[in-house]
Amino acid sequence: MFITPALAQTAGGSASGAGILVQMAPLVLIFVVFYFLLIRPQQKRMKEHKAKIEAVKKGDQVVTGGGLVGKVVRVDEIYADVELAPGMKVKAVKSTLTDVIDPATAKPAND
Image (tube, rainbow, N blue to C red; front, side, top):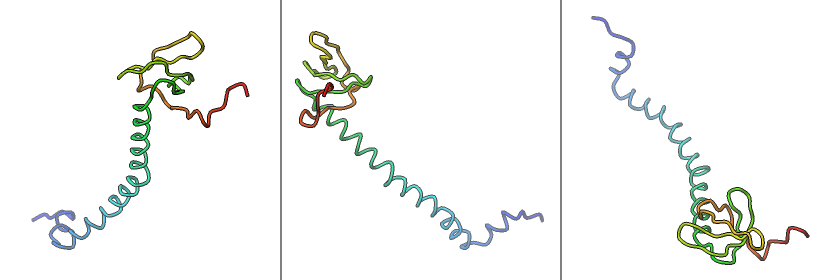
């Protein structure tokens, strides 16, 4: 009867069960490290960003996805009207806003 080496190894019994655990341990360890160093902090940042954008109100200074900076003059569920210059308003989708600038730390552009 012909027995392949792979079949002969599995006939060993409990030794192969422990071998599988030893082989899987580094992969599990790598996943855990990636989760705590990359995935979890990114999810936290996304949650904070979403909360910041949802809290946008009239008078806030915002940065759009295209890099334009302006003051919010009107907000609804989906859109925010942003005044880029006196008399020049654009309608932006709220989810494309990248940042809300704190007026206490913001300084004028021509200073």
